[in-house]
Image 1 (cartoon, rainbow, N blue to C red):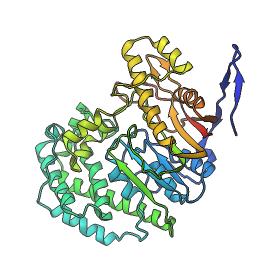
Image 2: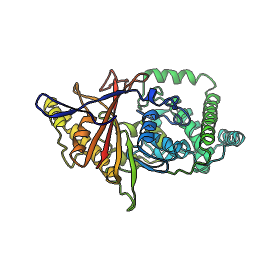
Image 3: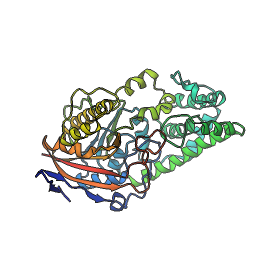
Length: 421
């Protein structure tokens, strides 16, 4: 499958899209949450079938892959499983908590009895940790907050690099949202009346035992997933490096950094809530209000553009949309998304591929063909469009919650494959 261009009525050529089902094409990936992919909740996760396809098709064993929008580290785990090296970058510091346990490289199975001993210590701990966030009390009844402060107190006193600590941290993060006023059924962080009523009912029960049981059950499930990864990756020496809390737009790569592929899924146009989504966990994990506020100002598209990207499709879209604030949003989004991609792609070896997976969101009811705008931009700058593949979303619905800019969800996602000249 390669590049497909057809003439348009005015004589110009337009890239064709090839329908594809990555789930059917990559049957060796049984589910999007297999192995350790489900350890942390993260919005709009990169589905592993797409990543597996890109790695298998465009790279070789021992190659090195870069992902400038790494999110929950999907590229890292799939690269490791296929014995490729990877460098993961993301503005969200949660990446540095996810990757060490999601891409566990210890090589030795973890011991359930050791984990259970750690869990008993956590349940009995009385030393507290208080998040450095002025609004933390808004999200919890006082008694729940106090109990969580003791649980997190154990985490912060334990060895932060120990796998058992990381297992408990991941489980405690999920429990901390479940026992909050935040709606735990959606990645977004907001309070609902329904959730307040649920917490009121929970507090009438033996909620402390339930909380500790949730953390224990979650940690034990994570241990089983990690041990399944250990068994599958026996003898694997691939390395996955990660840098969370960094700006991919301005990130400085080492002088000898070279990559054999770029595989990524940029943030969606009007869903820039990755840091907001993770706030509750980030503060419990020890990050400060000042740090998160500074990083939030760098999220795309909440920062001013320092250049205006011009392509045929983007110019036509901005003229059609018209409204000034939406034009500013589009300018910001494509400026910083493209700059981050260019920054990483500059380190690609000649002939290698950039695989970029995007959706087609809407702005003021108008479809934004992100893949097409990226294709138009890069095709005039030393890259050839090798293929565009449309994957229909069958079993999930993106951004279908309240105040959604795309209330019906996206119907398909697109893999753009660029070949560096």
